[in-house]
Image 1 (cartoon, rainbow, N blue to C red):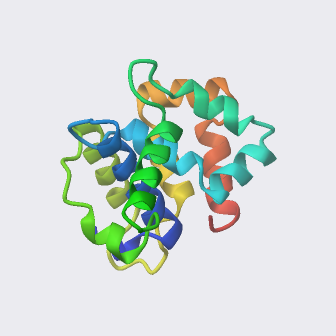
Image 2 (image 1 turned 90 degrees about the vertical axis):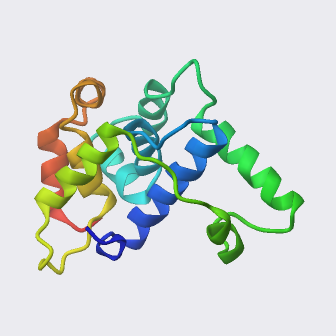
Length: 163
């Protein structure tokens, strides 16, 4: 699936997840980093709000106590970018980010998104679509559901409005 198939908000979230994974010193981009970035999008925050789910508590439940938090990673990156006179997401920053391996579970997520969309479809892949596919992964599904973001809630949100 082409990156152009993803909405701007989805591409930005995945880029942010990649940057956070690199800043954390991880060897590959995993589903949890993607999830953390997707949950920070306006679309996911809106779904959390409508479902009376605390987005901050949900995000906290996915942080790994052994690794730097998503926010810590982004602060490190922003400090380094400021030091060299760039800003997060600027053309210079984007150009400096090199290819990075993707974990097997993240590859499965991308395959799930591909299965959800046909190449001929004109509909962009939104953060809610990514979240819906992530919600089918066992451990992620359990934690999301425990906070009230079930597969059914996410499916309804995807069908209700673009996000």
